[in-house]
Length: 616
Image (cartoon, rainbow, N blue to C red; front, side, top):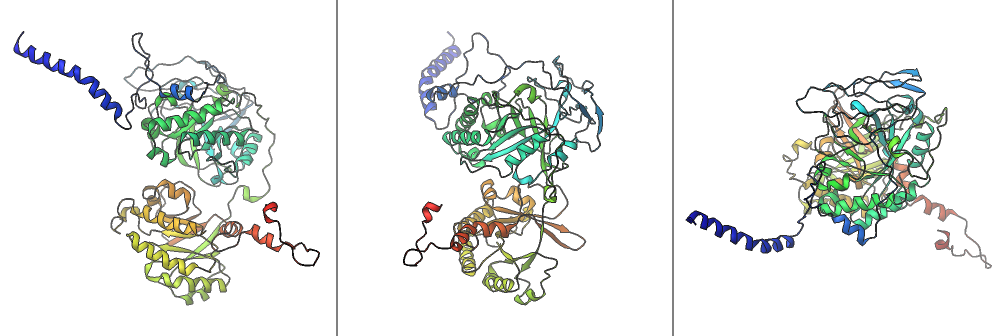
């Protein structure tokens, strides 16, 4: 044997002896996953001599005695949608404002024209249009992406339909106007969030009943705040209790986007949470799906978990879904839609699958209510418009207490008193003066400190100024800097969010209604998800660009070049909420009512102690 061969033989022999040692060390490494399908292609079949990959859920299911649901319908490659009585003809662009109604017609689409060097496989499915609510559209070349994979019930030739998802943040919706607009074919409605039975979306029942009365195809979603598999199980039980009186024809989607969980839990745990939530509902006859961002689905969830059920993926401001490479049935492509009958921005979705045909009735033993024709919208104008209140900011660094005598009550409904470290000691006097003139007010703490100890010092001064005084509007933590100027102001990465959390947590504990006020981009990039969800938000815009931060805002400010100032509009009735719940120094309305009840007199004509515990 040559010297080179002897050396090679020695290296190979040594390597073989090290395999058991390396293997044991590898298995001892924390967070090492033997099998992760999040970035693998699952379309390839295993060859006969290949072993099927290890699946963590087989062990989990066996341990918890979870049986796979057999309620899901058998999916075929040929589907037929419902028969139609009227049809809305829509152009092949993404959105259209003009519609033409024709009696009893079917949708005709031309094949997708697409120039490509890759081979395109066309499934020979026949789809007959059946629903008045279903407006299928043909994908135009270079205008809208073709879903490359084929799913059961998928519309042929790149067709898709338009949908929205709604929650309490769309307020009251005129569902008949939504239906008549021709812009919407289906709606996914938020049922609630979290694991408590009282966490039902305030508009869920109204939205479900009126949307179905208008003839809309609907599904529901549940926003998860689960931090463990047990939490996800409890959320499934609460969700079922909330939706038990309804039947519909789209899946129940598990809204899985809670950033704490995604940032702190392992891929295996996150995947188990999805599996347990969905399986719990499936065992009770529901068809389920999963909603989340494309990047989270691609990198944080096992692919084989997502492939078990419909995927609804969110990716904004892109020509196609780029992050998630798996199969998806619905794409939420924009949070900035404007739809007839809805007074706020609303999420817009494309759907490639005829879910009413695939799902049937959800749950399996349910019965979808017939549409009421015609549906008469509520008479109140509040169904299509949101009441607003105008605000004036009183900056104590540039004004004095004497300015209240000239406050324009005809123009402004309330005032926000803004102060930084230099003039916090003047807040109490200004609150007293405003109230003496019958002016409702709140407070803005303008944070110009970057160190925690200095912030705590400011908090102590502000707390002393607020003690014994009432506020009808929130207490805001404000950062005046634009997103691009944070570093110039001395705020390091996540520093402002950390200070905001400290501020809001302190005053939340003292029963204040707290919020965050910041520029649009700063809200999106500088403050973590948890603090934004927990606090009220005041969005500041310096231009007319579309909103980058698309969450709920109680107050919005937009710069007006003509006046060289900000137009400030409040859409939330804060005084009603604060006084009813008992925040900002106010006594809860319920307690006031109890205190005003006549007391029971005993035989000695003395007031008797009220059995408060039994009354509650």
